[in-house]
Length: 151
Image (tube, rainbow, N blue to C red; front, side, top):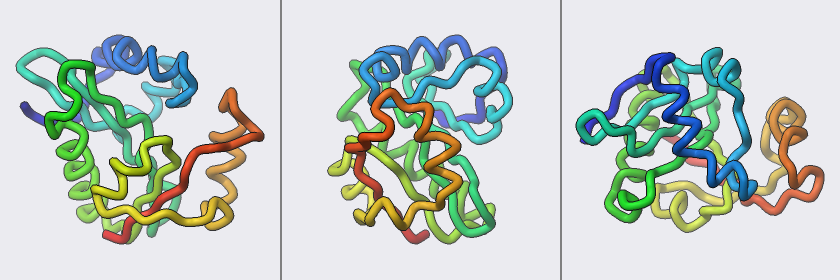
């Protein structure tokens, strides 16, 4: 398994991998143009040539970024791919000089096992709520859990 920055040619495979979670409302839909625009924020996990997972580290300020769209291919789940992706994002965050990483998720236990702690949603930067959450099919009734980690 290796972790690399994706190319624009990876977008179709990334969208296919995340499709089921998007349809269920667990992960926000991102069209190909949005993914292309933010391609540098993504890290992909590959097993040979096969894309088996990805996640994005979206920067909000010099101090804080968000983990977005963390997904692992069925058949690879529970094998440490998600944990390894988180370690890659944290390493990147430290290299960039970030002090905190946040997430909004339904997978509270996964993130707590990776050192995150739950925080009130009111502590999330407002531009996060209005820029992303308004696109969610569950908005304005949000039942995701907000968590943060100091790195």
